[in-house]
Length: 68
Picture 1 (cartoon, rainbow, N blue to C red):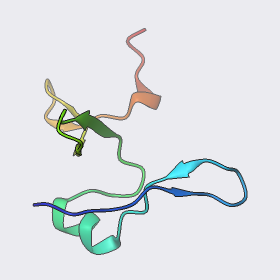
Picture 2: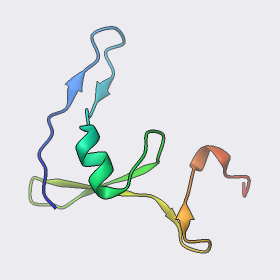
Picture 3: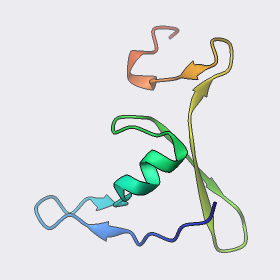
Picture 4: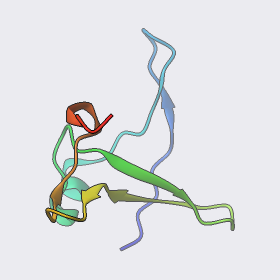
């Protein structure tokens, strides 16, 4: 699936945000709070994918990583 979204600046914080439409989140099975992997395709485009813990085959949340 290909979807184009423009990066925006949060007017209050100056942070850059990527506003993903709810329809897009639903269609790929993502939820608010999921960790996403940003991949440079080296052709001027980028891809996003949900970070997954391969051992447990479930969503991986780096904030709850106690392995360090």
